[in-house]
Length: 210
Image 1 (cartoon, rainbow, N blue to C red):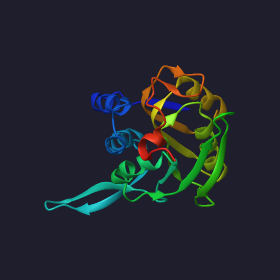
Image 2 (image 1 turned 60 degrees about the vertical axis):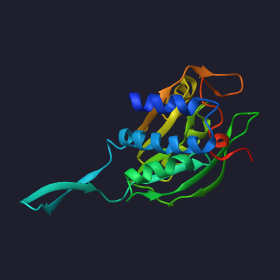
Image 3 (image 1 turned 90 degrees about the vertical axis):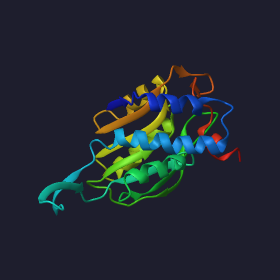
Image 4 (image 1 turned 135 degrees about the vertical axis):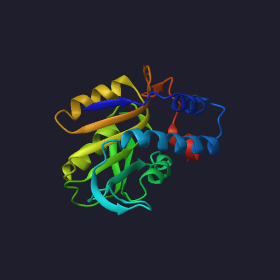
């Protein structure tokens, strides 16, 4: 498993505003989208491309285009939806699937309640979107779901992570081709399984409490 923390002053600046408890939901949503575009730039460095011949106004040349099969973007519902627009702006030709994962707040164990994905992911590059890598249970379950359907190259993009969550993923996904791209690696988890200092519940701050 490879881990890349995107160390950029614009990311740190936007994260600071995102963390602030006084930041309202509309601003929070806009910042998540902006952050996602920056993180997607880092996360797609290994996207597969193929050569293509084109004609410029001056001469023929060889460029590249995104190769088939197209990348698959998989936001984890519901908070991952806030990251989707920023990702598709950068990779508009990608396909989008959905995976509904929820964490039991007592056991902290993940459960899958919905999915809309191709049955066969053989040869597909998959990009999983989940704002918070806390305990790691939900993200590990989502990645394992994709691997069981044939995905061989998975990149997870998260705004924040805790060291405990990264360690859990390292154990659970040993031997698989998985990359984790982060906006920041925070200090720890608290006794409730929330990232410290973190930014609270990303889903609630994006969309409000149900």
